[in-house]
Image (cartoon, rainbow, N blue to C red; front, side, top):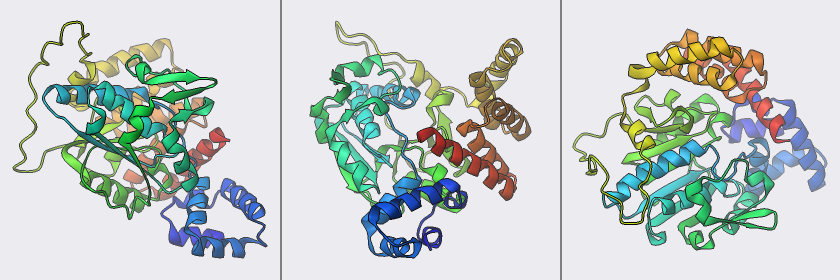
Length: 383
């Protein structure tokens, strides 16, 4: 009964609903609620939207921490710093699937570090899980909320308090918490930045494509969409193009709409005020550089040489695999991702990418097997 409810009422990946982890979590929740069995729980899900949201959250385990994938925030800061210098005064963002708030707070710090005033920053933090949303306004994160070094430019906004890290409370006003389903959510305006990370991995292919189209429709013409390492938006919408370093997982429109006049950006940033250190320009240069297909040959040569010396370096294999994907060399990409999985059978990103490549070739059963392995690896890692 519960499986049938999930299959009919959600857009979750079928292999996740059919997993052993699903049965274990649902059985535990039935015991916690004191229900008689599966049929009673399915009826509870039907009439209680809050419980349905909790059940969905149990299956789609949130994975979030401050400045998760620091290259994402570094690249965003560089881009927005440039725009701030050009006169942009406000920035709007959506954290789609915000969990307990590490992502929207990271965005708030990133925008403040790029020079935007608190009054000019607006971030919608959207999630289905009411329990997770309750934690968002606090801006306080314990051990599981901090797994990477805080960037140097962000440290001014974060302080240690006992065993926690607390983000500057003055930024709390920039975040609006909204409980909503992303498939029915109606934003009040367009966004300069949308982060939807570790959400697409849980959705069946039609739902992934539908959600990405919704997200892109909410972007400003020169807006940015960020996805997670496990869900690559470029595979779901042809008019998106990646920019920035490989590990940033950021996308922009491949071509601006007809008649749109892009914001004027100076060819070089103005000189910084006296006493102020000039911001690094690495990510800005990456955003305006030629696409990967035109420059990847030299880098692939370098990776080939490095891998001859260290054939089991997962980070090098991963970069090589992504360059093959960007160049449209599917067979080579598959070989590289399979090598990663051979070395690490529970490498979530490689398994998801193999699933996506299989789907692209019409191999739906193989894709389902890879995606199921990726989801099991993800849930096992979060236990």
